[in-house]
Length: 275
Image (cartoon, rainbow, N blue to C red; front, side, top):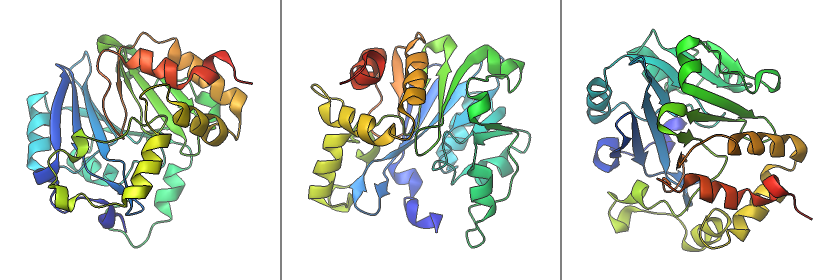
């Protein structure tokens, strides 16, 4: 049940942060497999038209609703950036029924099979990313004016990566982590953070961007890109061509100002080759 993946009191632990005047993050604690602290993050983007896009929706707490209202209140797009980040899609769709739902291939079918979870509805997606339209940003004219998109189909989670052009911000879900997740657990009492110390140490080592990031490089090269590395490499190379300076991951710390440099370090083998 998805309820087991949600903080007991989201309002008490969520960190709301303005990254730019047009980009807001909502960071929350999250334990993967009940063992590893990876955190979670949703990102709200105000487009040049004033319409809002919500990427990886989080719980619609009163504080989240207030921030949406502060940014204009007109949610035009609700985006599941991969097949894992979709629990709150229905909640947002009910609150903003005119918003277009966007997600990757396979997510509609995954949600349609769920029969015992009140959080997961049967809403139909307006636009679905597939290997055939993996660079398509023509959801509509407004969307195309603000975003470049790359759908990384070889990744096991089917990643939709978004580049918000006006503020030079890259938004992604599981393409790369930046652990440990300090901000996402900053409002959680130490005694309540949970997780297994050894498991966290090992997983953080595979998903840390510090130093030479060799653990993450190996994890991405031998694990996440293994199904079709040439296609994965092409996606990474196209993302690298975008002029971003801030990188917002769903898991771990946001990289403000140095996002492009860290991205290039982490994906060095995919950009330059590896023997």
